[in-house]
Image 1 (tube, rainbow, N blue to C red):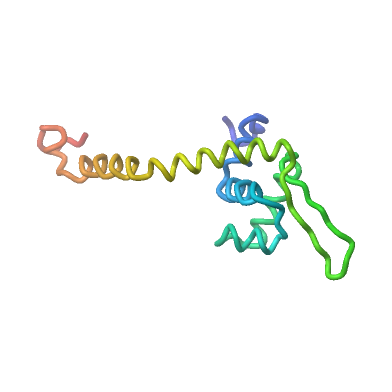
Image 2 (cartoon, rainbow, N blue to C red):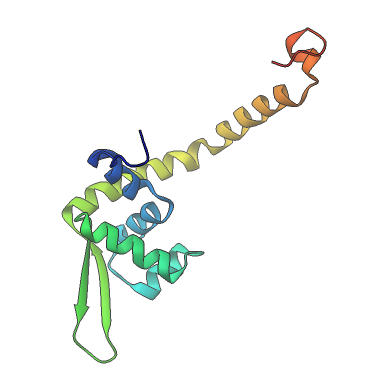
Length: 131
């Protein structure tokens, strides 16, 4: 796809839902609504700017609801919409799968890396030729 071509809508939505911060925000909001600062603490290691951008994107996509209360100091709560709850449950299941299968993935990585660290002649059987 050329850089000037727009991304297809399905791929763009998938990118929003499965982005690093999108996924973590959706999963965190499954439990209950959060204020911005609570959500940032729960997610951890996300800048205010990136979290605000992520929440705006998810709100635009109809996955997150932003409820700004006209009080002093201002209070803004974020919660999932019905659509957002569906998406969050899907990414939570994927997150749980990664937790359950991480050991198997690490073993696969070690096996792969072990085959890549041997000298080229051993991998191909031909001296001076890499695999």
